[in-house]
Amino acid sequence: MARIGILGLARSGRAAAQLALRRGDAVYASDAVDTPELCAAAAEITRAGGHAEVGGHSLDRLSGCELIVLSPGVPPTAMVLADHRVATVPRISELEFAWRELRSPVIAITGTNGKSTTTALAAHLLQVAGRVAPAAGNIGLPLSEVALWPQAPDWVVVEASSFQLADIDTFAPRVGVVTNLSPDHLDRYPTVAAYYGDKARLFRNASAESTWVLNAEDEAVCALPGEADGTRLFFRVSTPLSAGEQGGFVSADQWLTVRLAGRELRLLPTAELPLPGRHNRANALAAALCALAAGVDPLALAEGLRTFTGLEHRLEPVVERADVLWINDSKATNVDSTVTALRSMTRPTVLLLGGRHKGEPYTRLIPELARIGRCVIAYGEAAPLIEVDLAPHVPLEMAGRDFAEVIDRAAQRARPGDAVLLAPACSSYDMFRNYEERGRSFKELVRARGGHA
Image (cartoon, rainbow, N blue to C red):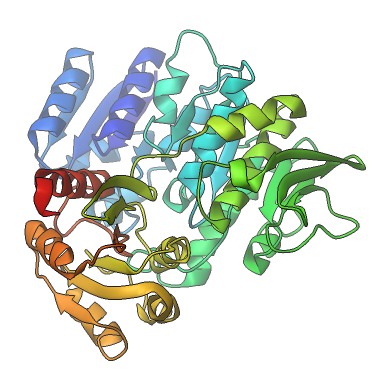
């Protein structure tokens, strides 16, 4: 019986505690925050035979543990980890902890943007082909929950964030994907290189049996694996595959196409892909290559690609009223993802931009706003920084921290034929618990406007 400490009592930490208790471990779980939801989680763990508390951590209990499991939301700079009594205790991520108990092969998907869509789409393609293949990890279903299932799935498709990869040890996916790389989380990482370094840990345990699916049009992605063992499959959407590359591309006549073992297979016309935008063609090719690496018949892929309808909070149309289309892209939590969202827009766009600043300049948005922007509504903690970066270049209004006022101002500025796009380029933590709550609040406020939107 091991003594296991669990830091963080949200869904991942709660699942890790349950997994440790099933193994027969002595569990101490804690969270610095005290909310009704976390109190309920602590009570559940206590009833199951562990010890749990909220509103703080017992340093004595943690220092007596043989291993500490970190939930993704616990930063490495957390004060509890810096205490000399705790700093010497080995620690791993919940992803690593669950992996050690998992009996299924894993497809792991990381990158700066597109992770969630690619994860969900890859799982969908496997499921349409008859496999039991949940989407897990950073997408919402903790890997520890899957490890608790009585029947192991055929595959698990895991969205792996840099925070989760930072504390892995033996984690070794059968298939690994890097969608793209750009600066992000600079509120948590000292440099871009440090952020990319945690992403590179995906390749830590590479072997000859590994398959790596890489964005060939992103130099940083191509450099990330270094000399890692395994087969490399590449995807491109703007350029053809080179003579020596295997993978996926968009043909001259706009078909999603794969080239494997010297054969080219046409999967689906891009016009039939339900997801809009060039970036989603890249996501579709990456997901298709994952499914092929997992043994799915290529003939089964077209149906899966054609029937995937996307995810909540990812360029999600909410309502069109008075000829104004309202779109929820609350998952756009960095500047690069907001640039991608703007590139997908074909209407003049009122952009809702703000939240908690993540360390990136907003000036990268100027070219796309010059092309398509009606105006920017800046809100939240980041609003003054957004104003400094963008006000000299694009029409901009400040809306403070009242989200209902943000929606009202957008409705006033939008004209018939416009779109209102929530793509904040910031985290949500100044006003909301997470990007999901922000997106749902946006949808509720927009729908509540009735005929006034």
